[in-house]
Amino acid sequence: MGRIMAIDYGQKRVGFAVTDELQICAHALETVPVAQAFDFLKDYLNKEKVDVVVIGEAKQLDNTPSESCRCHHPAILSGATRYDQFKKQRTMILPIVLYGNPVLRKTAVEVDLKDEALKGFVNDLFDTMYHAEGVGLAAPQVGKSMRIFVVDSAPYKEIYPDHEPFKGAFINPTITDRFGEDVPFAEGCLSLPKINEDVIRKSDIHITYYDEKGEYHDCDINGILARIIQHEYDHLEGKVFTDNLSQIKKMVLKRQLNDIASGKVHPAYKTKK
Ligand code: CO
Picture 1 (cartoon, protein in one colour):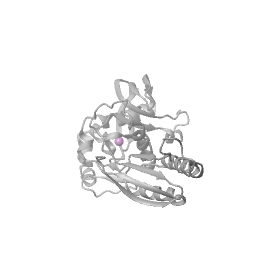
Picture 2 (cartoon, protein in one colour):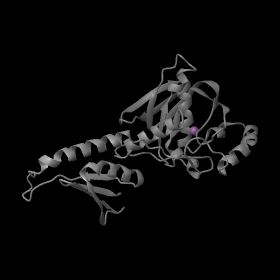
Picture 3 (cartoon, protein in one colour):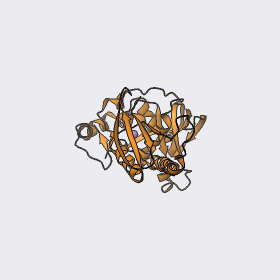
Picture 4 (cartoon, helix red, strand yellow):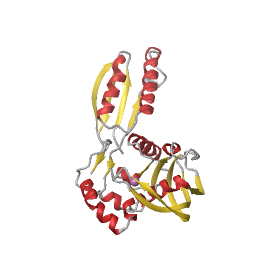
């Protein structure tokens, strides 16, 4: 449920109306000259949240396309096409939740794979991760207690030339086995800015998950990708990477963690306490 915007194209002017959140009543916003319609729409959508846009088509009383459609059809088409492009270009940067926020301590909930909003949310996770220059981001880190994380290991190609970069979403994942060697590696986390510590994890995992296209995977993964996945998977279990450190290390970090929790640390990306 959300706000619906209705756009009605006339020959000279375009009318805009929008409903309230509950879609109980609608109010007319404005009529603007056809040539300014797209800019009006763009400005409005930048300021206000609208979930559905309905673009009208001129019809005659008997429901046949109006003759006058010939004049304003190009306007309808160009408006609709430009709006689609605008939506595609749209990047949604979500604020990243910082250490101290209770959502990072919850066990995340399984996702309904048929949920239509899922694709958009996965895109938002990728946009947010790239904006913050991360290699992984889990839904709880943007305040959603859902079993989803995204990964793009491409930056590790520079450090490990043999590494085959992987980009993808992990939906409803389950790590069913961890095996191989114990490997230490300095980890960081977008929710724990400015902290980097060696964490020992297994070199190999067995995981089942669905990707962003809804395809099921059941596979073994090793190396740096297994590292990133184990870190992100912790977020779905209500854990952060410093939980894996020794008691002494945790004591040393206590002050830094308190500083993050009390809003004293300001990374370059958008955050939320
Ligand atoms: Co993290």
